[in-house]
Length: 156
Image (cartoon, rainbow, N blue to C red):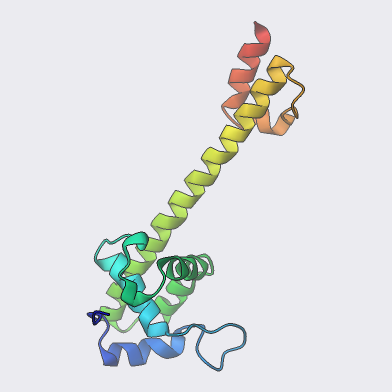
């Protein structure tokens, strides 16, 4: 295995480590190596890498990505950044992680909306054609563009 080029200096890690969840001794699950996880997140955030191209030295990329998503959803990154308001270098590093988390949240939200629209559209078409499929609920039809399509089909 290749040696990992660390982003965090030891003095920065000493300030950051006590603020992170998943340390040995915490209740619940603990991460194997919080510093390695942080370095993996920073590799993606600062080097504009992708999770699937994460170097094998960081461990399995899916594990790191899922942990990153959980921490983003729980707003861990912002709370840590608020705790380190007087450390400008760490603030810049954490801001890059927050931006990455916000971008992933935005993309996941858009993906969920597209999937819901596809399901709603399918139900509306099936309902309009009388295919015996599960009909769309009224609130689904009136709350999206599918309502226009289904009304147009029913009018013909």
